Image (cartoon, rainbow, N blue to C red; front, side):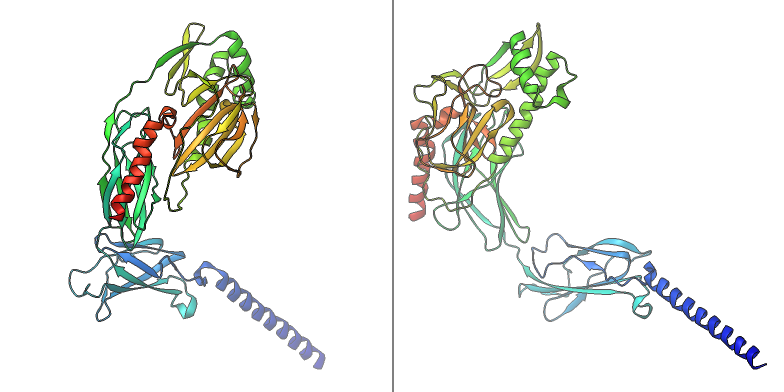
Length: 458
């Protein structure tokens, strides 16, 4: 009898332990389920904000399982008002809270507001009350627009060319300052001479029929001021030419360059290869150049004394900038492209001189440009040297005026030994002829800078 009772007691103990284990397992599984998740909502809110009170402040809020309730309170230091939000009829995982300044109840005279946001999710954690997040921010009221004043600029800008503008822009909370153009390009200005003044070289691409540019200053509160830059616009017509592509050219130079992209060109006909190299590959190479030359340093500019560029001693111009070339093969136009620079030739493997001081930003092979050298001279201005047989410098080298940077050659899309020379402003090719002309540089660069200094010093 005693053994039987002991056996029954043992079975009861085992069953009890199994029940307890099951309960523990169930509780653990329950707490690991989304229903009992422990992550609070995420409120994306900076500790300090600037607000012009015009457009509502927008605050992103998210949660893993879903938001249940949201409270938004705005205070002026004396009174607090709850800003109504859209009610959650069903849980949402992300929400954009809109904070409008109330028409009545709060004062803006102190220039400071306090924003408090409290969000709770649908979790059953914390004794079924859910997870709660609380964030606060101090808001500076700023409804004053930045002040912008154009000071002086080049008298004119030519289609395909460049111009310089110097202006004043001030705002204690200034956040963004750009030059906005009608063709979508944004030029970045450089601090100039004294605090609050800026200089910018702008470019009119030769493919754009019109040119207009505005200074756009935006502060941290979203206040924005626009002011037009004034240039006399000079139209210029560029040459159009048709080039007959010979069999030797297509099966020689074009075929060689096609080997740079074997997977893309292996199944193309000779005419298709010509178009691929002249258009698609050219665009890719120009993209590399554009990326390298779009950067601008933000060191304060006091002087910008450049000599006219003279990269090749006794160099003869054999092709001009802006030529719109159509390539004809077997009697049909199969491709077209613009020649964005000038070609200079003298003797084979001639020294290429870097006329003005600068830093090497690119020294590498670049498709149709062959061995390609690019030097930055400041104020968003770059000089480019293509088809080189030899590069004498490396990326990062700092060059003095008249140093030899490379030697002429026939690498890339070149049939004979020569130099392809280009000038770029923040990624835009411009007329090299302007930067090789001492009179143009004096009137449009040097005189503008000196004139601006005198105006500022008055």
